[in-house]
Length: 296
Image 1 (cartoon, one colour):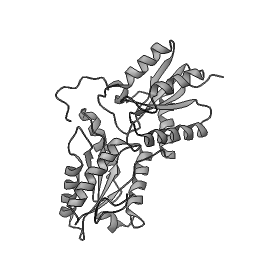
Image 2: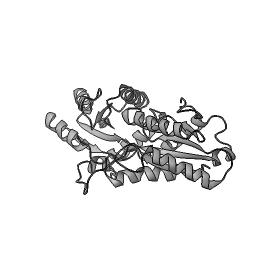
Image 3: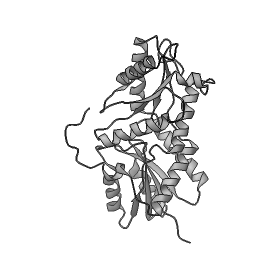
Image 4: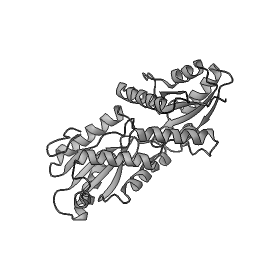
């Protein structure tokens, strides 16, 4: 019987221990649901992570893995990062001669992830979230990490469009924590203007929805920016939704990407293929949010 390639989950770097715990939970979930596939996970892209991808690779090799199917745990490509995924994999090959790997696609705005995002919106809004009139006066601000690569940022815009289609919200706008425009306050300004133009009656209402799998530093910066804006605009209801988290749907999408990679499906993974790509031009750098806000 041929041993299947090991599944290596490559998260984009975080030093946040909560993010590391969430990745560990996802690895455990996948291991329980697919005991036939060796699985491990870690982070690339920033130094001093508590769960480095190098250690995950070494652990799989120590258990006998000779082939890896690498799935970038990303909602969108990262764009250039200080330590790109191909560099980590090349270094692993030097440490472990003969180790083979194939890289699958990032998770992207998969329908199952969109379902989780909608669930996070419902949780933030409460029991009335599915009433047509209730949703019709609600604008969503989907917030991504932001990258110097415009193609990476365009994936967040694509996710926003797919999230808006057929769900009855007044609109789904996008913003970025860093490196790309609009930033969170500017995105909230756009949502407020959209609500005023819609003329649905009553105060405008905005849900800030992180397009992040796990919590961490960028998400904390997101909330700080949103809280400051909400405090300055008490006439607008601002609600905070949670991150996607290590949900069963995420595990399903990871396994779908794994099977496609093992089967040799064409890889749409810019996270792996284009992290090291030269970028032309300079890189651009539930609790109440404030009075009158909703629950984080």
